[in-house]
Image 1 (cartoon, rainbow, N blue to C red):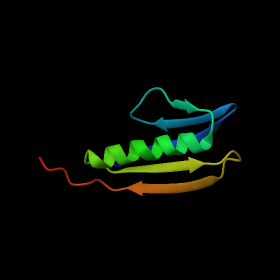
Image 2: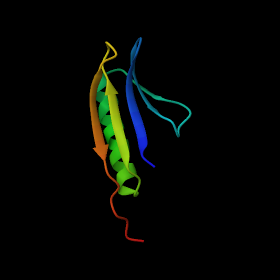
Image 3: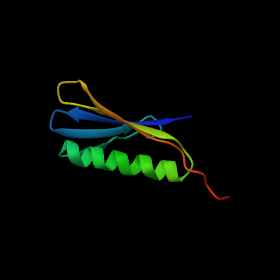
Image 4: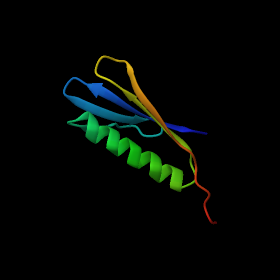
Length: 75
């Protein structure tokens, strides 16, 4: 199952949310939030779990989607 990571604007910052995690990560800038989301997606991919990053802009429009397919693990 694909793990979706969302980058969403807040009133005073940006949130990185994931359904599997109860609390969002909060950042002062969208760039920092997007960077954290992409690093998390790559870590999940290296662990064999496909993931997707969905970024929303301040106006609510979709800013981008990034797919990170699962990498094969040598078990």
